[in-house]
Length: 394
Image (tube, rainbow, N blue to C red; front, side, top):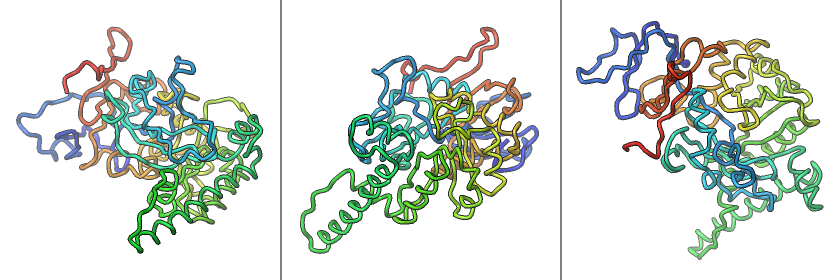
């Protein structure tokens, strides 16, 4: 199941040096005589899934405050902060990811600040965040709605309202415009210029190099996200989009992608009161390009595929469901040159499933990251086994 292509009955995937070099029917793939053969008979072979909005490694499970590095809630503008610097590769969430066939995670700062920081794409297996690194930064995370107004409202300072949250974002981007102009002037005059890490990354957003991942649930907050993006001209990616179905035609018209979810949760606050499993299907049918997210650890990351299954039950077509956790997040987050499908030139992130992954009874039986076997399901023990990256030959 290449996903970005027709299924191949009795297919073969050829891997060299961690990269896919051929995909096709067995008779059409020239297999070298010295190749290691992995018998995938009876399984479904798919690309590794992609979690487009997770907090694995920066919001560790079972660690309490010591493992929570997802929100630096002391500065409303955290653009200079990098999720990469807070990732613990030994977080249990990465092992869960492999068990659920998730081989790539876009790790994002939390939503406590109007501007939370820089997101990073990593593989789900490795000794250090640098070993796992795919791309940094992938986007800048920002938040509208209840979270930032609650955090700073409790501190009795700006922003404590939706007006204030939008103002903080607008002020930061305006300062970045001024910074860019001053930097360009200094360069023309061949004069020294004091760099500022906050403004440097925001200039890259303004220049279209780095997209803007906007946390927003309600339709009015999504409209504010669109308004700000059009005011400053940056590339917008809506994250969560709980009420995106209410303005799906507008999102489709403006070609704004939506990373939808988490879906298997209760209605824990006012802005998610319209959370429903049917919403992804409504947006997709309207022409919105969607990806699904667990927002791990809000929903366990190994349940990513189950969210797709439940969305299918409520109207999302099966092809879009699979694309929403493979091809679509890869394209939305700018990673399609590395992951998202089984095709030559992409990373050999490959998962063997016991059956159709959209069947809740199917399980990942073997997982490869960059061509290396890192997880298998041990039938005799009825449990998954992850290769320990800290105690293997490299």
